[in-house]
Length: 257
Image (cartoon, rainbow, N blue to C red; front, side, top):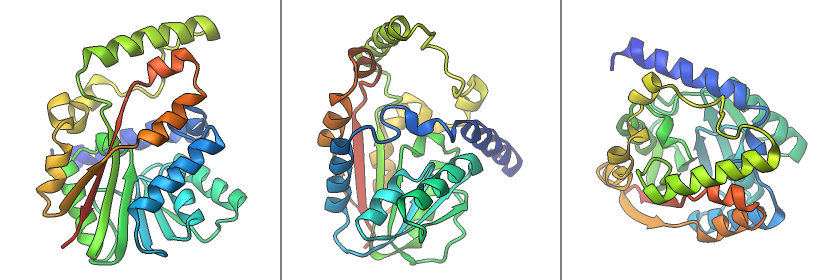
């Protein structure tokens, strides 16, 4: 993909997410919905970051989900994202939560404006599928890590071609549509086919290779799940929403040698 085409793709993506900024946190598995869910996220994050405080770069920070939790744990955070709409929400949440020291800036996950060997941790959540060049992005994340630093990628099986997941999502969406009296199949944030074709991790074969992609970057790899977070998320969901969200997260932790 040429630089011009890549820029066009990223502009389209940022425009989509600009429109979602004010409502993103309202969705299950996006924003926090219970105190139990928050506590499970805090425990999970704390278990993955052994040095406190750490200097952390939150790539694809969105509305500040990880940056706020990590700041609550005592870490120094900077969050970057292509979407001004999402970051505006993140800045507001940081102000309201008393974490005014968090830095949020417009930034490209594939072209970081950060020096080499400058962060203890680089982290992201639900980001990789939005990237035109995931291999390039991972190389950038490794570049800015200090020796001994950790890359933490929190992703999921969103694009694994599973009949079971598809059936659950269809039935769940029907139930939500009936219960809420709306067409839950309609999603203004959906990417069109042209955009999807340019995002490799939205395709089953590539999505299943994420762990190997990170391993090939030269990091020492550990893979975990997010079982307790997911249990807390689904505990307060109606049946329809539980079926609509059958996904399992994979957490890839890579240490820079």
